[in-house]
Image (cartoon, rainbow, N blue to C red; front, side):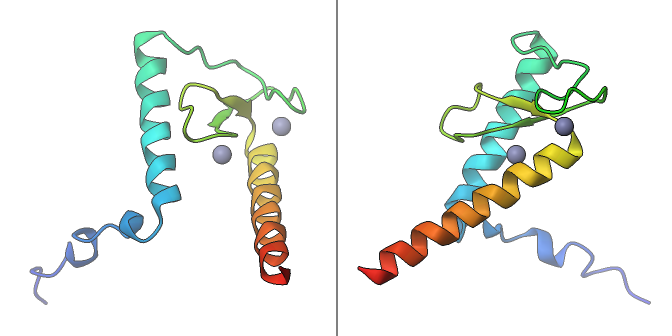
Length: 97
Ligand SMILES: [Zn+2]
Ligand SMILES: [Zn+2]
């Protein structure tokens, strides 16, 4: 057993191929820092279903990293599923033209 290729896949970032993912990562980073320095306060419940939890900061617009909606796991997944559906719809509409 050798240990030399352990970090093989960490070298190249997929964000070059997916600029949206890159923006998302940066936005997430900004939120993390803002929570630490008190600019943003994480509520104790989901903004959509009001369930008590440690909600995730969801970005409706990644170019506005400090504009977040606080969502529980379930609502967050749903928000992204809707985002993807919207993306697909837009792409289909483009193809039709
Ligand atoms: Zn929720
Ligand atoms: Zn999100």
